[in-house]
Length: 262
Ligand SMILES: [Zn+2]
Image (cartoon, rainbow, N blue to C red; front, side, top):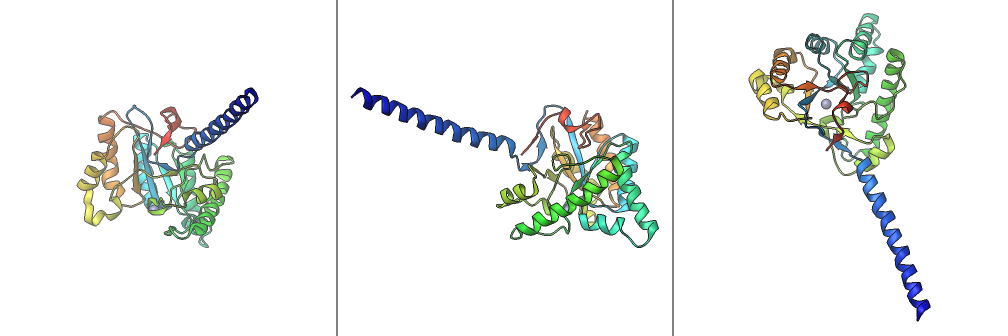
């Protein structure tokens, strides 16, 4: 009888340890893998400005004129194919312009940064292998840019990734694992890319009505940005907001404010 009790006790101890192990794996996985990021977890008045679908030399330089004049950072989520076509353009003057733009983003006074926005800006819902191939291909292009311009060897954590159209679907586990990405940046998407329909007033009111601590604003590389971006920044500054950056050299590096959370 005593032996039986001992055995039972031992068995429940083993089972309990096993349960703790599983719980631990589950909890730590959940902590590490925040696939979807929509904001910085902070009580401080801080936002992030991001600009998708570049590089485009005219529009991006106009945006940088504003960011630099305001001493504010931006993150440019660029499309791999567009970077390649720009930097490898047969016209040397064009290729030089693209290289200067990337240098201005990474080494200029705005402390801005470049992120991965896929290679062809596709829809990847049923094309997860394509998403993996494209994210890795664009990462390799960015790896060379960061190495050449900043002498920095990047990893996926240093260079944020945003899928085209802010896609986020079942199958992100696979993409995350195969691309070594722990998170995908989303945020509040305004309609600044449809400026004919939206116009300055509505673009501003959309962003400002979604203002909260740690908010990530999804904006776009468009010539029209020069019409509203300065005013958005002024209004945010008047409300006491700071602007976080993905650039680790920036005094406003996002980790100084908080973690990236869903
Ligand atoms: Zn996009």
